[in-house]
Length: 263
Length: 296
Image 1: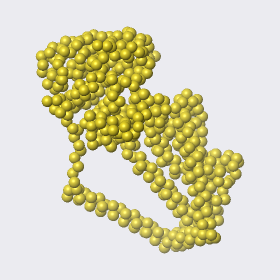
Image 2: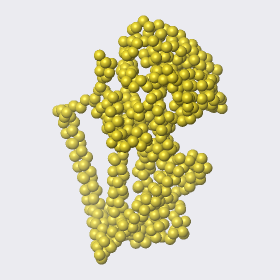
Image 3: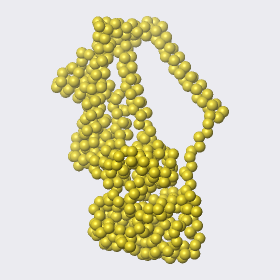
Image 4: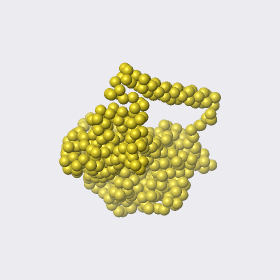
C-alpha cells in the first residue's frame, strides 16, 4: 500500500510567558493509504498540534509533512478535518452549514442543496435541516459537523477527539456510525483520542504518543471488520491489546506529568 | 445484518404536546394579567390628565405647567397655521428634525462601519490610533457644537454633523469589537474548507460582527435624535429642539409641552424601528450568545 501522509522530523515549540515549550520533537510517522490510524495519548502530548500541522493550519518549526509525496503548505481540499470544538457557523442553519464548503468551491446552488440533503440524511439529521446550531444537542452538532466534513467527499479524514464531549452511549452510537460510513468510503483516517478503548474499536493501527510526540507504542489492531463498537470489547484479543497499550499509555502519562512538573 | 441498520438510531425529536386544559388555563391567566396592566395604564393617564386640567390655575401655576387643553389648543394652532397645510409650524419643524436625525444616522453608521471594519481587520492600525480615538470619544459631543457652528453655521449641516459624530463612535466601537471578537476556530474552519481571505471576511467576520453592529445601532438610533435636538437648542431657526427653545424664551409652557409631545412620538417611531431590527435578527443572535458563552 502507498503512503498518503508522511510526517518527517517535525518539531514545534510554543512560547508562553517568555518560555519555550517544546510540543513536538523530531516526530516521524507514516500513514498508509486507506488505513484508519489512531493517535492515542494523554492531554499535553502534542497530538492536536500534530494534527493541526498535518491539516496545514499550523506551520512546523522544522521538518516536513508530505501528502502523497507533496510537501504541505496549507489546508488541502482533499483532506477533511473534524476538530474537537464545533465550528458550525451560528448564523447558518444545519442545511446552510453543510452547504458551506460547497459554496466556497463555487458549486451551483441546486447541486449544493442536493448534496447537502444527501449527507444530512446519511448522518441521521433528516428533519433538522432548518435548525440553527444553538437549537441542537451535542450529538446532533457532531453529526452536523460530520456531514459538513463529508459533503466534499474528502479522501483523507483528520479527526481530533470528535466524540470526546459526548456521553458514553452517544459516543458508542457515533463510533458505530463512523465505522459504517468509513466502511463505505474507505478514506484514510488519522484519528486522535485519549480514550484507549475508542482507539482499539476504530483503528487498524494505534500509535501511543509520549512527550514531544515521541512514539511509545505502535500496534496493528488485527480485529476483524465490520466491527461493532459495543460488542467488540468482549473479545479476548481486545482485552490483550487493551492491556498492552494501557501500559504504554501509563508510561506516556508519567512522561507528561514529569514534564509538567518541570515547567 | 448490516451495522448501519442495526445501530442507526434516529435522534429523538422534541415532543410537542397539544393545547391541554392546563395550557388553556395558563393562557387565560396571562390574558387577564394583560388586561389588568393595560387597564391600569389607561386609568393612570386619564387620572393624571384630569388632575392636571382641574388643578391648573388653582393648585398648579398654569404659567409654569400649562394644562392639557391649552397644550391641545397649541398643537392644533401649530398644525393649522400653514398654507398649504404641510407648511404648518409643527410639520415643518418635525420634518427638519427627522431629516437631521436620519442624515446624521446615515453618515454616522456608514463611517462607523467602514472604519470599524478597517481597524478590526488591521490590528496594527488600530493600535496606533487607539489612544486618540479614546480621547476623542471621551469628549462630550455637545461640547463640539460651537466648533461645528463656527465651521458650518446654524443650518441643517451642523446638526447632521453633530448627530453623525455621536452615532459614529457608537457604531465604530461596536463594529471594531465585533470584528476583533470573531471566533478564530470559525476562521480556521473556513480556511480548512479552502476559503480565501475574501471568504473569511464575507462568510465569517461580517456575519459574526453583525450582532455587535446591531447592538450599536440599537443605542445609536435614539442618540441620533438626541444629537439633532441638542444641536437645535444650541443654535437653529427650525426643528423641534428650536421650537422647545423658542417657546421657553417666550414663556409659552403649552408650546414646550406640545413640542415635547411630538418629540416623544418621533422617539417612539424610532424605537419601533429598533425593535423591528431586533426581531428580524434575534433568531441567530441567540445562537451567537450561546456560542460565545461556550468558550468561556
